[in-house]
Image 1 (cartoon, one colour):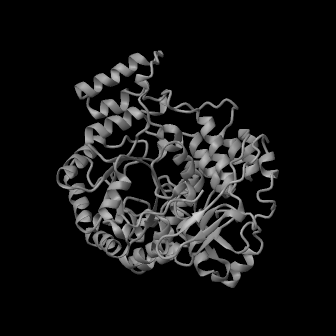
Image 2 (cartoon, rainbow, N blue to C red):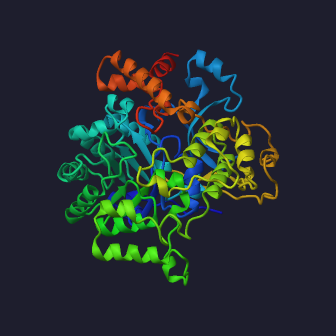
Image 3 (tube, rainbow, N blue to C red):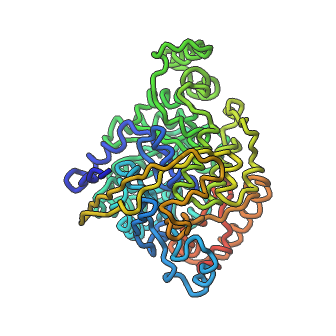
Length: 536
């Protein structure tokens, strides 16, 4: 199929493009490790209208080269081997998966054209601009992370550090808006737990600086994930912003059911919603529909009437969050597909896009557990699987083949015909022509991996493995308390010994955005290792 030309953003205003992109949107949130190609494509296949990349620190993309991957039909941003030190190059020679470099970002233009937002972590306008100039032609928007509260990010002047430095935050947005011909957005979080005014003032300052959309997470810095999102404050922020501003406003935080989505949209008047952990729990939550009109008279109908009653009588949001979880739009909605099926589909996408096994097993473990869900919702989340799979089983896996066997994945996703992948056009927009061979999907289990793609058994010829750019450890799931304690102490020690400005700290902490955080409180990467890698 020949993809349609990408919108020529310079022929319409950034705001018009953003309004088209974000209005009535349902978005896969940027999640470290998780929001890579396999999960993004899976979310789109089940109804997501937009997908964000995982947050990537600005400097991590600087040394990369843009490569058209004919085997996979993707655009890869590769950190070439020759740009590493000789010591690192020698170490890379022992890694057969990617002999020519490390792949930091992989985009499928056939699936993601018109639906992909690149998110960066940055603390300086000139660094943000250099990163954006590298990738904006392959993205439909650029988003700046202004909500990450992790120590690595805050110490580098990034993430939630920007919430307390509006001048610098506005400079970043202004610099991007003036120079990048795509929608520029920011993802922030609440600045106060009960008072909407600080958040509104901060958002307005970003909009005045050129932000064309704002996403607001319903928690403040310091809120842990098991504490419910602060919907009451979030609703007030959005309501008041929409009264005075015309940019799209997106809400994020604890939208575990379509009842949650419908209620928060109705109460706030937001332009779209964003799903993070709920999408990991069951990515088919993106499936929309009005099943109440399809003649279904299942036993859940009474609970559906309760939800309607809540809409009419304005039940307090805190009560709605804790009580209204059933019905056609609840946890047992007929719109939802089995969670085991979603995990199997995710693993199949990992095979299709050659995800790193460590990264794949991390995401599967996150899909299988509820340790970071709000406490009041945990009883409603089903953790049983027909095959009896456990997180311990996943942690034993070392290859994608192992994951396929544990989850009994019985299909493969068609690969593009390498001879039919060409890049045409010039200038700011390029079309990619991709045709797909029909692939026999009757194989089962590990046979998925023994079926050669494009008649090549070489990882290199077959497109290269998307790099595992994070510091993963099975203890994160098997012994989380000890793991968090050790890593938190390492981060504290490294930060206390790091001198210099925020910009210098940022350089010291960033190996590639990559190793940064595992998304849980105090689960930052091992800082000593980062500095050693930087020196190498």
